[in-house]
Length: 260
Image (tube, rainbow, N blue to C red; front, top):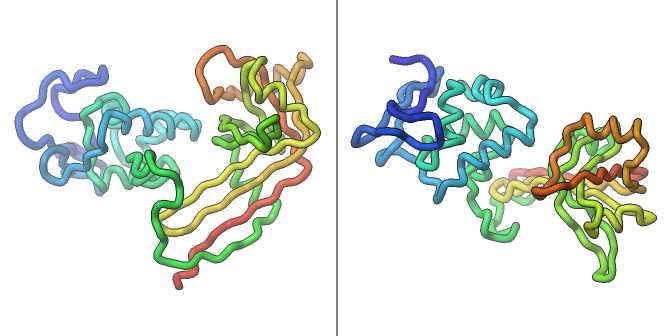
């Protein structure tokens, strides 16, 4: 028996299987992944071809290489490449759980469950308690990078727009196009970045709001600094305007399950 999870025999490694034997294909894994099956029996269907894209996006947002994720999840790099590239991939629940843990997310989120529904469609089994986060906890939740909402005011009132960000010390940096509303409104007297994560099943989560002054980065030395971060813009296209938010006020709240 092989010692590490591998793609099914005949997979060409170019996003699709070249050939597949009829019936159930068996993947061997590392440790608890030995003998896992994919196919009609015990397979997890994910409703489309987006599973690989979500795996890849979570990995890239975490700044991890395929080798790092495969090592954390106890699978071969070729198997991870198969999962990211083959639209017919159907990993077992055990594989999904290990992969989600390696990527710092949940199996449910990785599988895309509830993406077409607004938040709050499930009711937790417990009554969570609301806690105030310390400045250090807020900073930890912001992490080194992530997805947040840039909050500003325009003629419509308060507006929140999703952005990919990275941290430069305590400052928050993201990219946009020079003519976007974000760029034109960024230098208001006060703007914010809001970041959160909610687990609807457990009824737990957190939110952090970083508020302060933002500016377009134009000075050569500062521009070199922010470009070195490798920030990826939320949307495709030429988005070479860097916005830097210098927080003066960072607050956060956390919902923690009490078990009641």
